[in-house]
Amino acid sequence: MDRHLNLNISRILTWGTLLSLLFITLSVVELFITGTHITTYEELNILQLLKGLVSFNPTDTLYFALLVIIFTPIANLFYVFLYFIFSKNFISAVCALTTLLILASALILGLAV
Image 1 (tube, one colour):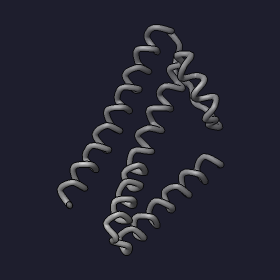
Image 2 (cartoon, one colour; image 1 turned 90 degrees about the horizontal axis):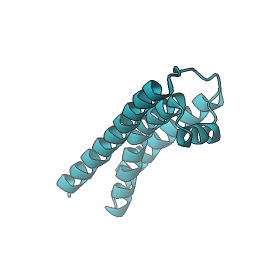
Image 3 (cartoon, rainbow, N blue to C red; image 1 turned 90 degrees about the vertical axis):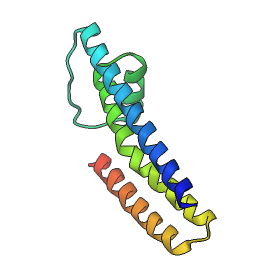
Image 4 (cartoon, one colour; image 1 turned 45 degrees about the vertical axis):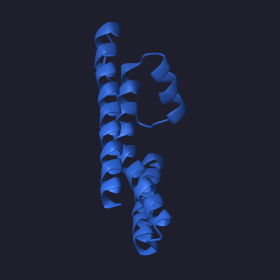
């Protein structure tokens, strides 16, 4: 069972990293094609980010890549939580859920500021 858990954790981290790398590369390509530059946002609006992603805005693509790399460990923790629940290891599930909630609250508070 532990081998299965470690293999899936490795897959989640690998695919999250590769997906983020793909969007970073796409952002650099968009940067050279459009001739624009990367700007910073004072506030991050998810809907605006998704609109910019489909309109080939390199800034929004780069921000989306950063969100993917941030959410990869959160997805990993969610998987570990579910694994412990189904394995009936409730103490470890509570630890995983506590860590997941702390990260989610920090992320929500960070986006709200």
